[in-house]
Amino acid sequence: MNKKLMIELSGFLVVAYMLVLSACVKDNCQVTHTYTVYEPVYKSKTAVLENIKSNASHAFENPGKIYTIGNYIFLNEIDKGVHVIDNTNPSLPVNKFFIDIPGNMDIAVKENILYADMYGDLVALDITDPANVNVKKVVHDVFPERNWGNGFAANNRDQVVVDWIKKEITVTEGCQVQNPVFTGRADVFFIAMASNSKASVSPVGVGGSMARFTIVNDYLYTVDRHNLQSISIVNAADPVLKENIFAGFDIETIYPFKNTLFLGSMGGMFIFDISNPAKPVAQGNFVHARACDPVIADDDYAYVTLQAGTNCGPTASELQIIDIKNLKEPFLVRTYSMSGPLGLGKDDNLLFICDGKEGLKIFDASDIKNLRPVKTIGGMETFDVIALNKIALVVAKDGLYQYSYANASDIRLLSKITITK
Image (cartoon, rainbow, N blue to C red; front, side):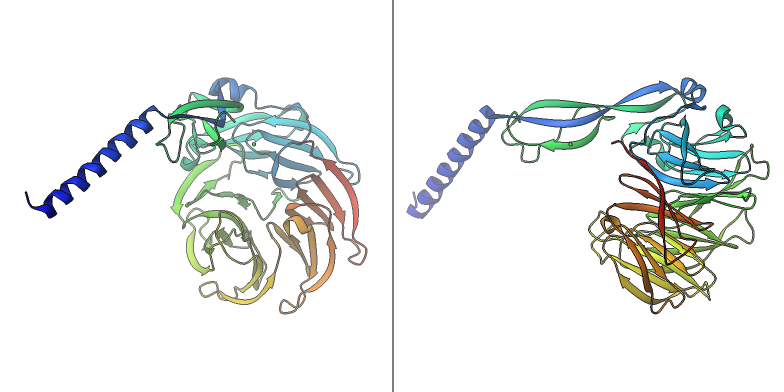
């Protein structure tokens, strides 16, 4: 036999033998991985709807969106429901009731009707008497992208996810599994994984800049990740879905101003004309580097916050001010560096920005090309703000704060309701 061929065959046999031996070793090798998961708890849709009422109040644990109308504040408890707070005296707010609405993220109010999402459904609640809230109507499948609770647990017309139970699940796998993934039930929500062997006074109210619901006259407008919904509320207790319009990608927030809707997305700001309220029409857009993007507006300018260091994308944390005098051709006027901004609000010339761990920042915006700092309130991690009637409602990681800015040179704390978790 050719010597070269013998050498090559010999080398091949050695390599083959080593591969077989390696495979045998791997087949006999096992490693244990422990996963932390949340498993859903289901209730029938009938039982859930019967429990949407004025139940006993309880402490704030994981608050989200905020909405105010008249003397009441409605504060969302993420995926759980809505806190009803009597704010007749802003210096002494009273947490009165809790409305259990599983899968709730957003709220809006017109007259005596509160609108809330319950995963994929829209529910209309009569709040004429806050002590006796009751369901007036359920509109199914308004938010198709939320038909999977928390992205994992199925929600349909028969069952609703009402809670999650934390569990530790341990599985044994072969050593050859380089990126172990537990392949158990499809409705288990993974929260963490450890790979070591056997080893966390208008009839319409006002929402914050992080809102996905807003009301303009006789229409409720809502957004999910890709769509804009127009819902007639001519009869407030009988919401009727009119249009479901593709609006763009990664939509996060909605803000109304006059006959215009401003939609904040991870990739920019989308502008819709609602002269025909049932059928919003795209007017223009402003594209920025990918980032989380709440937006508010006034007659001439839109104010957009971008936050870096999140799953929204790697970009600078900043405030952008955009000229919107021509809605079809908005353009950037000025940017201001921020730390980690989220919600924002504006009342006359005062601009309020929730700058994450740096707290609440207040600016004089009479000259948008030269914002003048008025005050920074630190010591809290802020999420959203509503500035209305000389009172700023601030949702922070540790509580709901209220500040009086009747005197801009002496902005002072009125009250705080503490978050317990």
